[in-house]
Length: 293
Image 1 (cartoon, rainbow, N blue to C red):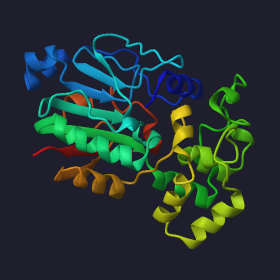
Image 2 (tube, rainbow, N blue to C red; image 1 turned 120 degrees about the horizontal axis):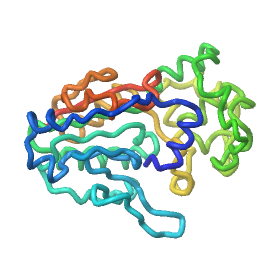
Image 3 (cartoon, rainbow, N blue to C red; image 1 turned 90 degrees about the vertical axis):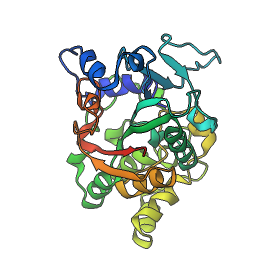
Image 4 (cartoon, helix red, strand yellow; image 1 turned 30 degrees about the horizontal axis):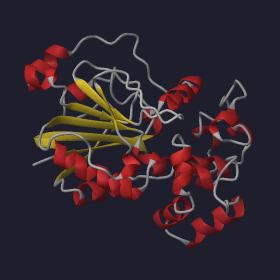
């Protein structure tokens, strides 16, 4: 559930690829999907509240702190992925589903539930495209002591507002181990202000990863992130993904045709438009797609 606050952070850190202008591509939608699909907005972007395209419906968490739900327009649906409730979309009706840097904010149970919902929603031949951080890249950089990989750290929170994002200190003052941990299991890190009762120190991190397989060590860390804190601070991360893990979860959701992709290389012609898609930190992202048979 990436909310407006995430866009604010990313804009400050200059982590997005912004197009100078977004040219209309409605004719491509008409050619491939037809007028009815456009008029009914049967294209669903899950987790990007600031996204707008005339053919797409946004599904995101729009509840404010006072409990009110304020939608940006009739092209938006309020939904909490952590609720494990069905999405209000007719079965076998969706042309495409896209979600970018959202699933790392929710539990594995919520991800599995969402993927099953995506399978239900898509019409036969429909495609889901998923992009998340690639944990193999950040793990390798941490293991190798490659501080330059973490390009967002030196200039993080230039306004001195890290406290607004539940951090005790700016990332540039943290150890590389705590930066790595905060990037996939935020509330288990020692640098979050309000976090897990038992935080993971640098020494414990080294013990964990030296005694377990990478995947088991990552799971151990995210299991230390209290769900109630994630609901309070939804901009934090509490999950990790590799192509193997995401592929397995897509298979378990019912998708038989699952494959890795690359930036701007979707099987869907309309999702190859990088004015609208794959704009979030491509240098540390992975891309997966699946087709409903």
